[in-house]
Length: 136
Image (cartoon, rainbow, N blue to C red; front, side):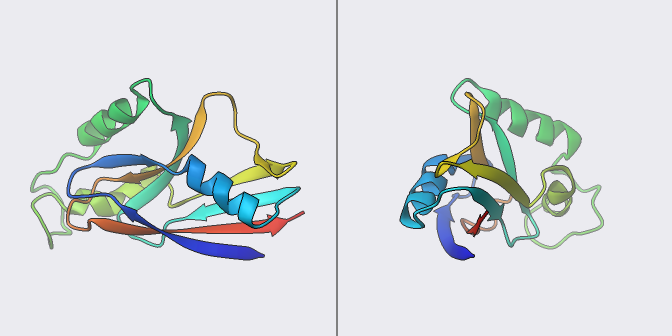
């Protein structure tokens, strides 16, 4: 298995960061052929999603997460900025991992699919994302 860690600057605002190009570069560096790419976020307040980007889906995802997980004082987990408890619930809805088939050295994504980091936690401005390629 080959692995690397990306440092992703997410800033202090909610974000959906497209990692697809980073994943493709990593596979090229691994001389990938057939196998699996695992994308893992080792954080309690971020997740990984496979979704369409560039047509508003990122904004839609963040909007629905704000509705489902409002940043208010309802959360028992209270350290950090107000409403931070919601960020700790996020990985239950947006898993901290995704596994994508690799065929012929390429991500076997659908036409409009991208691999994205989802981060609603403005308290942490940099995230790590571990990419691991397992040859088939």
